[in-house]
Length: 67
Image (tube, rainbow, N blue to C red; front, side, top):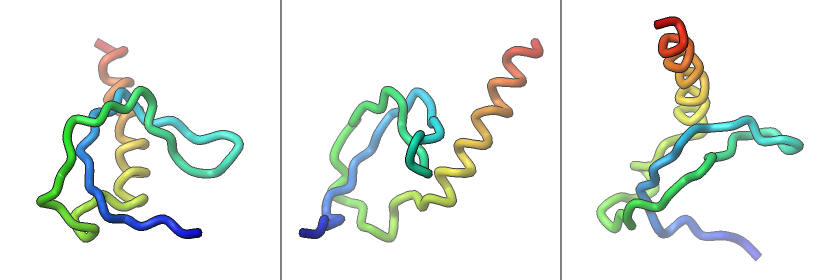
């Protein structure tokens, strides 16, 4: 059995977390905003982009706590 990547969705996330015990990332408190029928597989964020967002969220949180 295999999965097909046919539906694009726009999500709102609260934050990204390191997924334990499996390596990877998890969206915490993610909410589906809408189905994106106008977007294809080439338009989705890559795992590299998700990792960059994960690293960046700590920089933003650090700035908020230093004010």
